[in-house]
Image 1: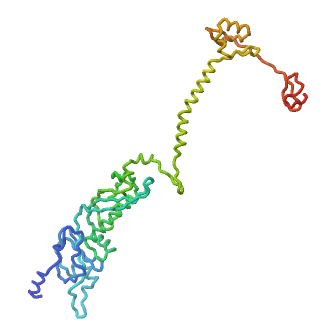
Image 2: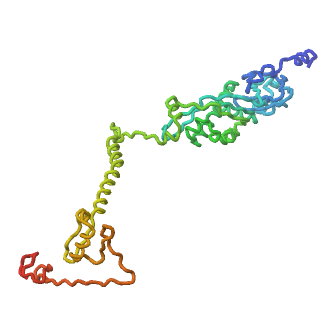
Image 3: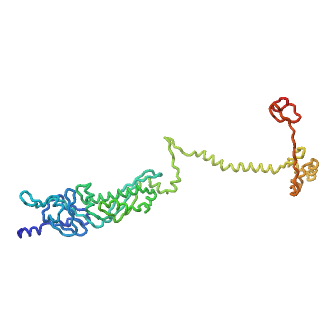
Length: 376
């Protein structure tokens, strides 16, 4: 090689990060480009250069400056057979490849919006809740990250990579919350217990994609408009609220007239029967019953009260009233039995005649049965 060619290669334009924005996650700087052997590639800190051919990752370059030759590109050289001379015995001077730069720094405040979560609830029925938030992440394995993107996209650009990553996070947030099924009130208040373990759950799922979330924040929970009024009432009141039940087209509601009648009856019932009970008690207290051995009844207290005490005593003695009744201070009082004396037991013997036809018991002197009218 002459000195002129040496100077030409020295100042030949290489591949560097001057074409890449620091905010880019993935930068495609060469798309199916023909690159000459000896082209330099400059990789600065927090970046990784990746050579891709037909969506297959070949060689990678960490921080530093490199010269693209057969020794520095072993996988690409073997796949494209760059070390094999042609029919004329010359080695190829160019090769086709895609050159990507992957940013390895930690990104923050990436937003995701309207993440749909299906919540099942007995009060609100099935509804869709929309979750907004932001997250931070870092690419831990650029090769796994690009391979995950290449499974769905032929060409990966920065906007595509960020959109796909946000979609991953959003789907995992929905999956986690739907599995946990928090209450509507807890989501409305953004209770931290609803989102416990969410970050670890997402990191565990996307670890194979070469991504790790450094943080996750839920900033807003949105409900359908029809739900907001009911949520503001409160869970305790909603649980006590009676929900009408429908059978066909007929609405089954409470019978308020019947309920009112039952309520009035329950309120007045005690008063009605209480008055009746007091009246009966007064009647019972105003009368007492005294009979002699012949069955004469002295039960009219009014008549007795109008008589004098001497007359009452005389009536009691004249009519042979039972000896256990006395007159004290104008009132007839039953005498208390003496504890030391035992009362004699009086036994009454009844004689009867049994009917031979029907078996009924008749008086001793009866000749005709009172039941069957037959002669005894």
